[in-house]
Image (cartoon, rainbow, N blue to C red; front, top):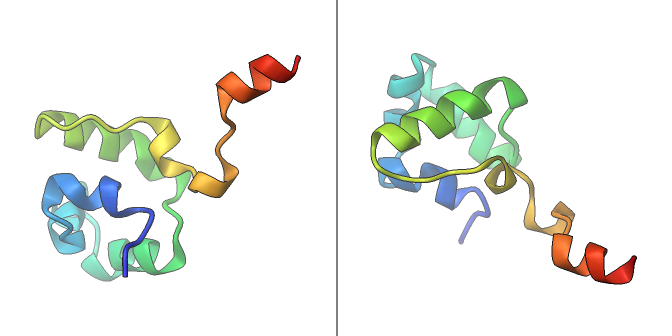
Length: 79
């Protein structure tokens, strides 16, 4: 089953434990983010920076569930 957070874990080949090592966190903590479908705000900058160090681009928008993302083009068009 595809998880909407998969692109965030992609720089670590989908391996939550590898991401946990980079963040100096317990693997169980990072695995729970995936299972809950939410990564705490406090970790987002660190994850973005760690992904950038691996040559991958993540943005803050990637951490927002697709159903809750505002389509800025549609919002602008409606005004």
